[in-house]
Length: 464
Image (cartoon, rainbow, N blue to C red):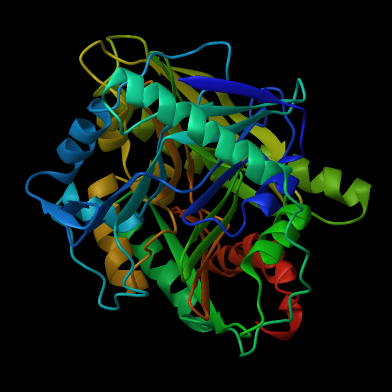
């Protein structure tokens, strides 16, 4: 491994230096926080790509037979690296997205009636070089592993050469900022207000009948974008309007994924596991006194607290499948976290991963996140597919990295825009319980969507 420390460069400036390189991944702690927002990562020019489509895994376009989760574990094992605790955790490895629809590789679930953008169920690029940033200490490094070379001499030479290449790229002038025009077409939702309210009422009815305890229902917004639309500038605008600790930008040829997620799905640090489910949301307001009262209302909400606790119990069960006995514990319950447009209730669940388990088995045991499915999970996912009717794809899946050193950090892909060629799509939803007010649930989806529309320059009040 070739490790080269550089003079501090702001990650967004580094992003602009690498903006035109193929298969760009930016894992961005856009909110500065000692625990949640310390590190950011940039990678591009992967040496290989793992992809899943229709339940079939492929590697550099070649189909691989077998369970896609086992295939991923075997591929990661080829490039195992010792962890360097003196560096940020991502030191080379796989990064990208796992779509929500990967759930059908784990359970017998119905496919939504509308396929959406027909995206793959997963794209994970294997990166031999990562540029990492420590926001707390204002330090940054190029970490170059030399993979996929296996001969030690050639591997060391590749690691040095690739580090030189990245250092030269980062020293070049940055790509200019581009003013993005608004969307070229009208925004549409797959739900009218009345239909969304009816969907919530249907879920409440299923809960009262004893079918489920909770389900997460979302609406899907879409519009065409102008041919002059610049996804990189859009992402920078989004992160300035809605900074989030688990943000990300993925640029894959015609596909861009821009996420400003506040929610950690799974982190693996050595054998220590953490998940941070969000359940309970209220819109913020400009007046500080009124905003404080809104936060107090959320903290006192019986409905939101019950919703959060149900998901905490689900995640405790999921983690217990792969963690050592009696190690799973709730270290924070229904704490208040405040973001640009909303307050959230957030809990923290931790455990110790069993010796015979790894990052992939942890993902498999918990995917997709319980905070975006419902309780019980499988029945809730069946109801989601039936009621929403359109594939979620990236939304409510996960974005992040799995390192060659066994480390992992992933978000829940909420507050996430997918731009496929000239079509922009994003979803906003919430958890439905027996105490849900259908009108309030609809308004909550708009509160969550607010900053995404703002980033497009759209006045939400004039659209929905």
